[in-house]
Every structure is written in structure tokens, then in C-alpha cells.
Length: 69
Image (tube, rainbow, N blue to C red; front, side, top):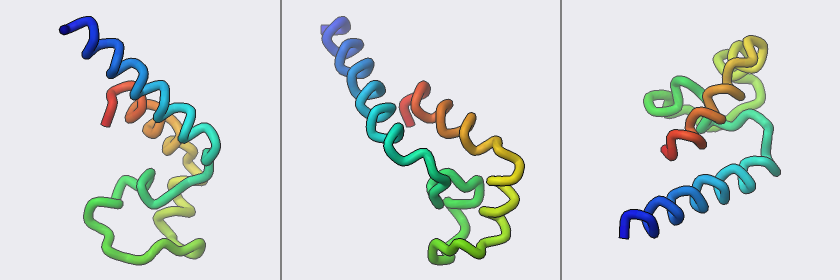
């Protein structure tokens, strides 16, 4: 049973990777303030622009895939 769950988790993570591969643009879910923001998505968001300029949101997204959040 443990092997089956491991395989299922591995395939689920792979499916997430494939799904995210098609949308590598920054989304509000990638924002470090997404849990407490409450604002509607906007292209003029200052926090969004700052995170895109830093470029660390891509590494955080990859970490979420590996961890399985």
C-alpha cells in the first residue's frame, strides 16, 4: 500500500509540473502576500512588479511542486 501511495504522489507531482509548465507567468498564487492580500489581480500591483524584478518567484513555485503543496 505504501508503494502505491508513493507512486500516486509522484504522478500527482508530475501532473502539477506539466500543468504549470504551460503557465510560467507570474500569478497571484505565486505572490508571497497572496494569503493576506485581498486585492483583485492587477498588472499594476507594486508587490507583483517587485517580485518579478527579483525573479525569486520561479524558485518558490518549483519548491511548491517538489514539496507537493
